[in-house]
Image (cartoon, rainbow, N blue to C red; front, top):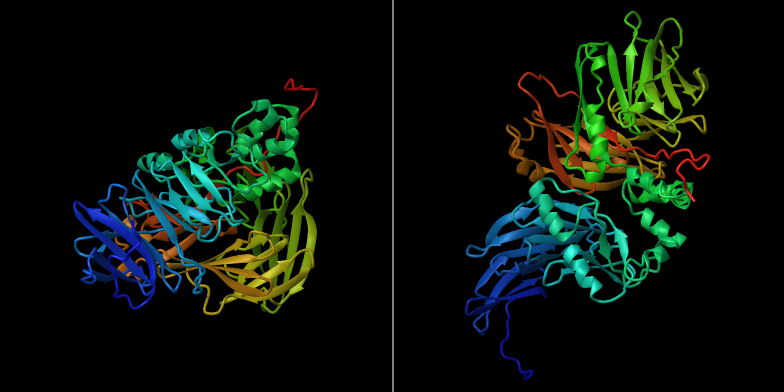
Amino acid sequence: MHGQKLYSFEGHEAPVYSICPHHMDAIHFIFSISFDGKIKAWLYDNLGSRVEYDAPGKWCTAMLYSTDGTRLFSCGTSKEGDSHLVEWKQSEGSIERTYSGFRKTSSVVHGVVQFDTAHNRILAAGEENRIKFWDVDNTNMLTCIEADGGLPRFPRLRFNKEGNLLAVTTLENGFKILANTDGLRSLLAFGRQPFNVFHVATMPETRDQARKVQSIFPEESTPCIALSTNDSNVIAACGGKLSKVLDDDDLLREIIVRVGFSTTLVRAALVCKRWYQHASEPAFLCRFRERHRSRLLGFYLVDKEGSKVASIRFFPMLPQPPELAVVIHRVVSYSLESYRGAPAKFLCSQSSRVLISLYNQNNRNKFTIGVHNPLCPERGLVVVPPCPHVQIQDVYYRNLLSVGEVDGLSYLHVSVVSNIQLTTSTVHVHMLRHGDGVWRMYHTLDTDQLLDLRQEPKAVFADNKIYIASAQKDIVVLDLNASSISTVQLPQGVEYGDRDIMLAKADDASGVYVIHVKKIQLHIWLHKGGNWLLIDTICLRDMVANLRIPGCEVEDEHNAPLQIHHVGDYAEFVFLEMGRCALHLDVKSMQLHKVYDMTEEELQLGDIHPLMMIWPPTFPVVKDNLFGWN
C-alpha cells in the first residue's frame, strides 16, 4: 500500500451515500449509491460507470451481497419515510423481491434503516427501536424483537462472520451483542463478562421459520444474551457460584422480571418464600406488566342463528411457546356447547374470563350473565345477578355497557333511557362489587348528548371513563369520576362507516385510540390532551397480496373491502375480515396472518372475541408453611 490514487470514479450528481465492493471470478467491481438514489456500477478503470439505475425510494440506500457472494440486497429509506428492503436481479438491474414489515411513521424522516445479512440466509434490519428478521427466500417478516429495550429509533447492526453474534447500537452511546447458543459459547471465551438476559418477543409463523429464527436466537423458552457496554444494572450470568447471583435481591429481581409469562412467574414464586415476596410485590408486578403485555392465546368465533347461539368455537393462535402448551390445551378442552341453540349473547372475553348472557325468553331486557374461566376451570361457573332494568313507560331503553369489568372483580352496567321525543336522556350506572350480591346505583346523569348512539363501534371503558360512538363523527366521553359528559369529534376526514372504525383504550388509560381502515390502509389515531395524533399508517397492500386470498386481489379493493372485527387493548392487534377470511394483524411486529377460512355453508363471518393470558397472576395463599419453605 503506497497511498497513491489509482482510479477516480466520477459521475454522480449528488454526494455518495454508500459503496459496495465485490468480485465475481476474476472481475472486480464496485457499486456506489448517491443521496438521490442513483446506483452506479464501476470496474476498476477510469472508463466511467457501466450500470445505472434507481434505488427504491430514490434516497439513502445501502447494498450488500450475501455471504456466499451470489445474491445482492439493498435497504434504504425515502425522503417521505418509506423504507425498502429488496433483492436484485443482477443481470437485469431489476427487483427480484420486496420484503414487507416496515412501517411509515411520518412524513418527517428521522433516520435511515440499516441492515445486514448472515451466512444462515437471514436478513436483519433496525427500525422503530426494534430489530426485524427475514428469511431471504420469504418476503414476510420472520420475527421482531426489542432486545430488552434501549435501542435507538434506527439502530445500526452487524453480524459477525459466523452469523451467531449480532452487534446492535444503543441509545446511551453503547451497544449490545445478541447471541444464539453457538454465539454464547464464543462470548464465554472472552472471560467473565456481565450479561443482560432477555427473551425474543415474537414467535415465527411456521416450523420452517422457527428453525430459521432459532439459528439466530432461541425461542422464548431459552434466554438470549445481550452484552451492554454501559448497563449498570446487569446480571452476572457468567463465572462465580450460582448462589452469589441468586442471593442478591437486585439481581434476582432482574432475572425474574425477564421470565416472560405470568405462568412462569407463578412457578418462580413457588421456589421459596423470598422468591414469592419478590414476584408478588405490586411494584414488581407493574414493572413486569410494562415489559410483558398479556399474550393473545386465541379467539372465540361465535356464530348465531337469529337471537340464538349456533356455535362457540375456540381457535388458538399458533405457534405458541412450549410454556403455554398446557394453557392452550386447557382452553381448547373447555366446552361452551351448552349454549348451542340458547337465546344467549357472547358479551366479551376479558382478563382471561368469558362473559355470556342468557336472556329471559319472555323479556329480553332481563338476562343472567355467566362468567366462565377457561384457564382455571376448577373455579367453576360464576353467575352474576340479573342486571338492573329501569322500569319507565314510554321511553327508549338501551344497554350501553351490558357488563364491563372494573378491576377484574367488580362489574359495571351502563344503560341509557331517552324520552319518546328523543330530546333528553338519562344515564344509569350500576356497579356490582366483589362479594356483594346486589347491583347498586353508582351514577345517574341527565344529558342531551346521547340521543344518536351507534351500535358500532362498541363503547370502551378505560380509567373510569366510557367512550361512546355517536352520530356521524362524535365520541361521547362519560367521566364517572367527574360526573361529567363531553364530546370529542373524530379526526378530520374520518367518519363512522360499515365496520371501518373501532375504539381501543390507550396505553396509559388517559386517552383513546381510533383505528380506521380505508381501502387497503390502516390508520391509528390517539386522542390525548385534547388533540388527535396520527400514531401510525400501515399499508396492507403487500401483506394482503402475499396471502393470496381468493377473490381479494388488492387491485380490486372495492369488491373485497377490509372490515374491522376487533381491536385489542392498546391497539396491539387487529382482527380483520376480507372476502371470506378472518385476518390477524400484529401491529407491533407488522405481521398479517390468515386465521380462519369460512366454509361454503357459512353465509357470514361470526363475531370474533380474543382470549388473553391471565393478568394479574393468581399466587397461592401462603399459610402455615404449606410448601415447606425455609
